[in-house]
Length: 480
Image 1 (cartoon, rainbow, N blue to C red):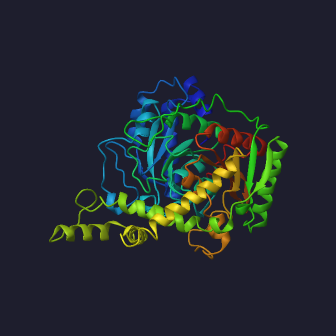
Image 2: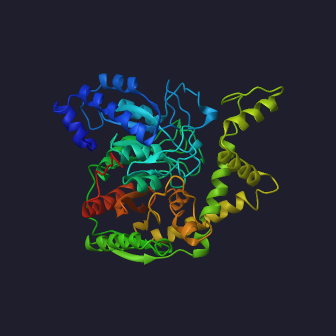
Image 3: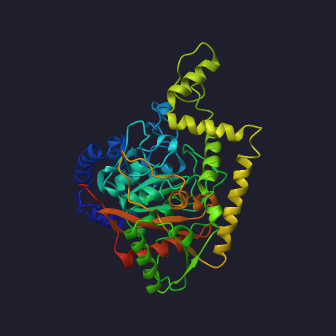
C-alpha cells in the first residue's frame, strides 16, 4: 500500500484519483497486517471510520484523512483503557476536546493505540495488551509511553496520530520510529478529556512523517478551550502558511551538556553533521552549557513531581468512583482489592513513591524540594533563551533497544543526562520537536529542537529547514 503525506492524500481523494471507499478498504487490510506485526492497536474502529467517511466533503486538508488516537483520549461510545486493567471496560460518555475538533474537520478515526499503562513508562512494554514493536525492527521497542501511535505512523498506516508527552513520551518514540514528534507549548492545546499523568507536565501533541504535516495538525488542534482552564488564550498562528526554510536569522544553541555525553561514535558523527548543516543553512550556531550538577537532577526531579501528581490524579481509580470493581466486605476492602488487581506492579511502585513524597512529613524535603529544583532548571534554560532562539540536542544516545534488553548503568551521566534531558521541555513548558536525522545499524536516529514559549512557528521552521537539507522525511517501514 502506497503511503502519502496529508496533502498528497487529500489531493488524491478530493480529485477522485483515489476512490475513498476503495482506499479505506485497502487501508483496513493494512491495519490487520500491521496489527499482527506490531501489536500497536488496543481498539480498531472500522465502523467509526466508515461512518466518518460518509460525511466527508474533501473541502479542506484534513477531510477524509485517517488518524489514530493514543488510548488515553476519551472517545464517546468507544472504549478508552489507557492500556490499564483498571480501565479495560471504560467507555466514555464524552469526547476529548481535540477529538471533537478533528471530528468537525472530517478526519476519520481508525483506532485507539496502545501505550504504557496510564502513560507511565518509556518502553510501551507495560500495556495491558502487551509490548508494541518497532516498525523498523520488530525485535525492538517503539518507545513510550506513546509507542502505539509512533509505531503506526512509522509503519505508514496513518499520516498522523495523537500522543501525549509528560517527560518525552512523544519525542523519544518518534526518534526510535523515524518520524516527527512534536510537543507544543504547555497550554497551547486543550487537555480536556485526556486521561492525565502529571498535570503540570502533560502536553497534547502529534506524530507525522514530515514537518509540513505537523504544521497542519498542530494548527487544527491549537486554541483556547473554556473547559480547560490551563489552555492559552493566545491567537493561533497559521503554521503552514508561515512555514519557511529560511533560517539565516536564527541563533541556535548546541547544548553540549547533553551532546558531550554521546558515546556511540556514529550518533556523535551524525549530530556533528546536523550542527554543520545548520551552519551551512546560514544560522548562527554556538555551544552553550548548563551546570552538570543541575542536569543530573533531571531524572530524580521528574520522578518525584510526575509520580506525586499521578498519585493525586489517579486517586479516583478506586473501583468505586471509577475503574473495575473487585469484591470486598467493606469500602476499604473494595478499594484495596480493586487497586491491587487493577494496576501493574510498576504503577503501584510509582504510586507508593508519589504517596511518600506527598506525605505531610516528607513534602518539604521531597515534593517541594523537587519543585524548587525544577524552578532552578527553568531559570537556567531561560538564560539561554535570552540569547538564542533554538536549543539543539541529540534525541538520545542509542537506537531503539531490543524488547528483552535491560537498561545499562542508570546512574551514569550518559543515562541521567543524555537519556532524560527531553524533560527540560516539560519542566519549562516549551515547544520541543524530534526530527529524524539519519540511521545507525539500519535503525533511525533523531535530533531535538526546543524553542521559547509559544514560538512553535520558530521550531517548525527550523525543523523544516533541517528536514529539507537532510532529506529524511515521509519515512516509513512496512516490513521491518
